[in-house]
Length: 145
Image (cartoon, rainbow, N blue to C red; front, side, top):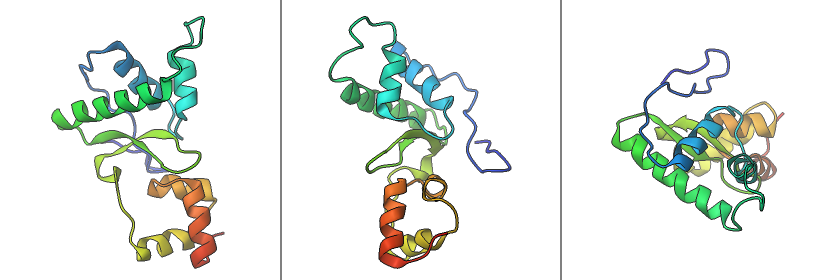
């Protein structure tokens, strides 16, 4: 996967995803255009913009399921990119490396992240966690900047 040499964020791969379902392809394209991430609500707004009623009440659940399906397809095709969620309050979906998905952090990981200089949002993005997690860990372990 190609990454920006300045910030390290992955570029959306130019691959034929064969995602099949129209919503899956559209969700992938929406997320790929937002390198800083995009909330489920914003995805729903874009996905259902043509619907007079604003889309289904279960849009969040539908998007979550479609993201899971997209990631299964990407994995089956051997791509090293996934749509990942930062997790926690204010979570956003963004493209990331497959190795970032479902990463569990040890105490020493959390301490390292807490002491990493930068805004909570930037540090969270760098490590694939929510800015609220970074905030909590900084309060617990000190650090920041």
